[in-house]
Length: 112
View 1 (cartoon, rainbow, N blue to C red):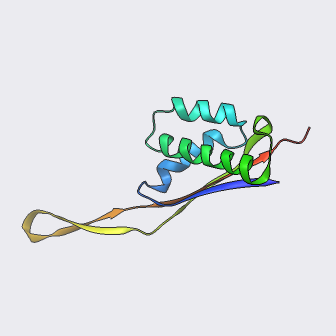
View 2: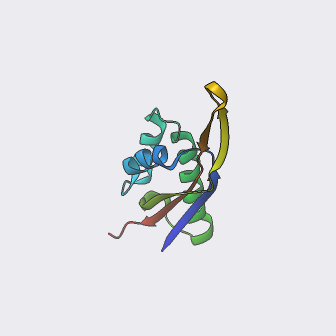
């Protein structure tokens, strides 16, 4: 049995999110929350909230035991890219790519 939580169109680059997701993959929930709380990255508060949502989904929707949960899968995929223009010297224009992410966290119960 698994529970998942997704967050779409987050205004943060997928590369920045992937670094933090690699830290919490296959970790128990308590350790994953502690890691997210103490990691000084921009994605940490976003992922902490998403992890709480996945745990709540597991508890309320699937009647899973919160103490036995662990992060079984977590991944990020690129979302739509907003394209902006930055004026440069001599009438040129550089393109600025504002990237977005779709983040998914899946939690499962450990088999004893």
